[in-house]
Image 1 (cartoon, rainbow, N blue to C red):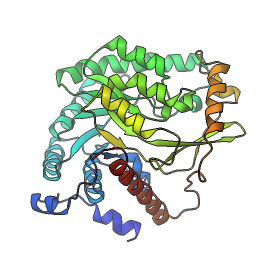
Image 2: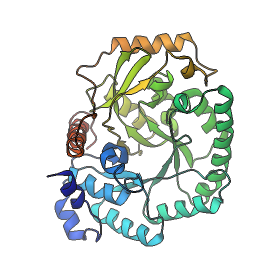
Image 3: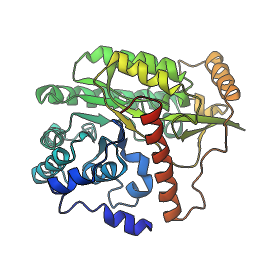
Length: 347
């Protein structure tokens, strides 16, 4: 099947009937899928968002249990259709949205929360920074100015999610280091504010992944589950998502740690198939936004990188055709589903 044919097969209008849905769904894992597991589909869409209803149908085809994706039609008609689809497929649903923008009416965010709730979402995922801290900022002052805006956005969002009883997870998105993020969550101290726990992002900020997971697990609202492979390069190290079990994270321990702290939390696979990310931790610019890092953090991280050489070349998509990239994404996700079922007890 070509990429075009595959995408056509995911059309969601009209939505599946209950009979068709139940006849075709073979649930292989309780793990769901996050939208960036299919960046080739996401970035080919006009909005660069993989709609959660489209993602649910894809998850059903692959035997996953739910979806964490975006909204492109933020209206109640879409929400009612999506809820019907969710119920027919018997899936969990989590919505990726945005914090209230600085200077924007809070009503915009509240409307998105209401639509997500009407669609049947169990939680929301947002980020503070739409990018990577060490790439977007050149000075500590610029980072601190951004942090001040983040606090305004969170303070605006919190009473809205509390009003609508909608848990909101802020992803550790290569922005907050572990300790400041814990302090952030403790500062606002709400049962409706927590973290979308990404299991490898903080390695890019020289945090130990397991220490991050253990510290943030009690605050976890939803999860981006991923394994990690690393390799040195001249300016620091390369960071790649790899199929579960192929990296150096102890995935059994990762899942057990989160489950112990938050037994009801959902695990959404975020198997991002792309070229390795460059973490330029040996450059001056990288260090310019941090006042809480030192040589101990650098030495520990580079020692971890050197002790965990990749078992195979890091994944790359450069040079692949669109069909080839989608094929590789599907292969990576399939391997993760089998590992989650057979090795992680996510069944």
